[in-house]
Image (tube, rainbow, N blue to C red):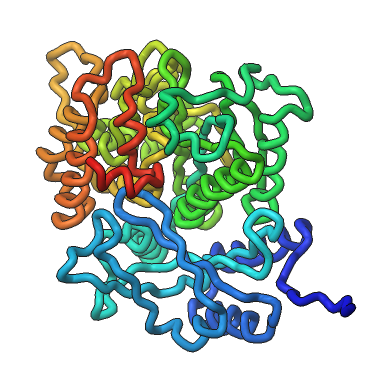
Length: 478
């Protein structure tokens, strides 16, 4: 009997994976010319016989992550003519428009842990194009990338971001899809903040996901159980805004896959269980130029520069209007509840965690602002682009100094958020009229499938018709 292995697909040790992914990330941060990166990647794929497929991924208007596996040999021959059916993606092209193009962003290239994602595969992000090859308006990733390039080309300014993404770990696979039948989620752990035994199920999940995250070049910082039962958070290093947005999608993907392999579900619903803290995605932002942090001023109020304070004021001025971009689902508005450390007040503060924007304690290296009102189910490219544009170019709030300042609050339901969004000339300008209208229609459709009043009980419909829950069949049964 032959002992020759029938399959010999690429499997790379974790320490080597980390080196390779950090090197690729460094090329992105150093802005190595696209043609040079493409040439290097194509040569690698051609020479490495153990790779069978390249996963090319993109994000739709609502933030869902889509992945297509291309046979490596086919991709190398047809990389300039990749197409897909855009009419099958909710919020993308209409049926009569159908085909869209997909261009590989060779700089955003990742080697994957074979024990989690399967052997013989690598992953690259894609950019969605119209039939004529022009950028597709609903591809917010490409929009964010263009904005970052414009900042760099203007005066070498870099936008930096880091996201603190919370999630829940539930027992059983596909717990969200099964919610229609069970009406409940089962916690893995009830330990609480920072508390988890070294080898209990929650810690095994966190350790496994952190290992994958490290291998994929995230540059890990810390990880821990969060305040709510079965809740987790894994933090990683600040980086350039486009890389940061890609890492949000990869973070959620790897968490879901690691949990799936453990017969569990990693959920990023903002408030899947009533009565306990929800999931947030605190978004930290700053700008730098020539290695200098433009948000830092030792003598400034709370150590923040004039640019930083102006950025905050513009974000607060449009807080209600962009709320739908930062809180993208019916369920997200349960989280904006003041009883659970909710950031629902349209104000900034260095200490009050109920503020939409917090100014963390920082130094010349770490000074930044933290937008706390973002839900983890929002489109990360829309969030970061919307905040970048609003903070730099958005309208300023006209204040009447003769009147006492009053605290404004973010919408506490998706209907009010929709009303502000639809009435906003600024939101329309940021997203472009076509994407703005499509996004509003998608959010209206989700709202109409759910009870108008949230109440104190999480309703089946707000889970079943959530945009990140992969239940296309159930959507069609409505």
